[in-house]
Image: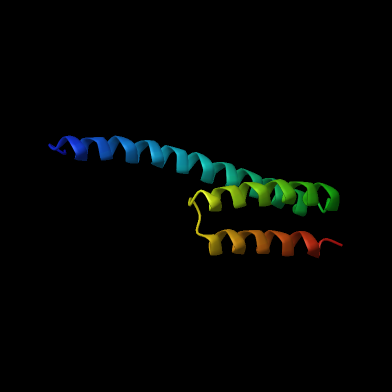
Amino acid sequence: MANIKSAKKRILVIEKKTLRNKAAKSRVKTYIKKVEAAIAAQDKEAAAAALKDAIAEISKAASKGIYHKNTASRKISRLTKAVNKIA
């Protein structure tokens, strides 16, 4: 355990940031699952709508530094590609 006051503060700050990051990542995963569920159901309209929401959420997480920009782009690209494959 830290003895120095500033180190104790850093521990508290990191805990808060960790919780915020986990919540954001969880939210992104939920949106991705919604898109994948619509793809599995072969529902083009629902998949497109879910994709739009997922892209917004992924971009938001990337802008806050939760995901690296390339990771966010890769996730968006793969989802878009999967949605576009639906007949």
